Length: 156
Image 1 (cartoon, helix red, strand yellow):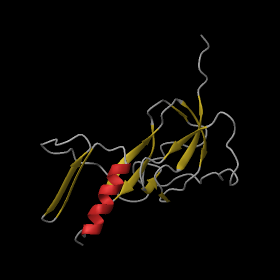
Image 2: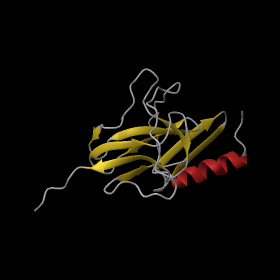
Image 3: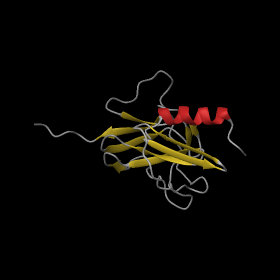
Image 4: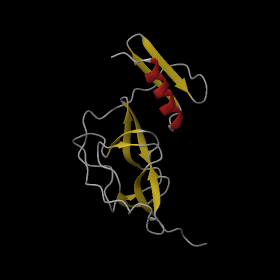
């Protein structure tokens, strides 16, 4: 299957919305290299990818439409549009389950689009309170995937 011009435009749109800084895609004779910070030269490191959808815990029901989450919870959102994976491979356990304590910058899932994978990382340390998506579910850019209860901050 060859990429059409519309496919390339969609890839560029997704790349622009992502947190990626560099993307290199090759298919047949067509090679696409883009960077948010200008020409990089050289080759990008290959990305490892899960082969099949890994097992994941059942998502917890999200709050009712229009309802605010519990006080103090912070969202972990999708950095791009794509398919959500809860584990690095089908034989591995999920990155997190409700009650898992995570450090700031911890990987809590993966999003795949056109065989390119991006890590979903936390911005703060805390405990995963709710998982709002199922393994293999298509997610939108900015969609809330998890609710995290941040660790208490020490008082000065």
